[in-house]
Image (cartoon, rainbow, N blue to C red):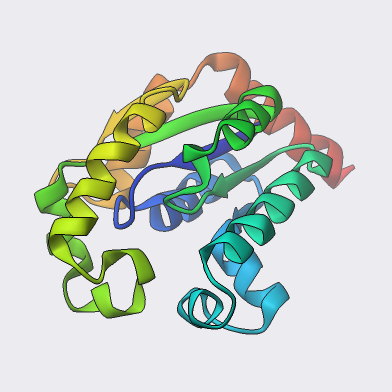
Length: 180
């Protein structure tokens, strides 16, 4: 079974994803890191040199490549789950989990790193983007609230309690088969 983490920039998809993958003994993949690796440049550089449409196409291609995974935890980019074809793909391939955090917390987490995020350069525009994306994120199979004083381990602990038993059993079977 594949678990796709979705949510806005700064919600903790990568950090929580790594922790969750370790807990269920599944491989972890970060779509942004995979795109950067394939392109040999940062997302900021991809946006600057090729534009957002090019980035979204590469992101979509990398997302599609997860079809061949038997089981994994996949951290999507903040915008991945805001395109209907990506939503449909994720819903057909696995379980989507929305890491839901209030904008103020996301802004505080991103802080000085906003300059490295092409879509977070302007606070007002970023807040508007956040507001526009929420309706997509709410299409996820499961939503977990991200709280300010909570560690990634605590978020994963709550997530583990919310995951359907079949997902956890599937992850364990996949691990067991790969060890044989």
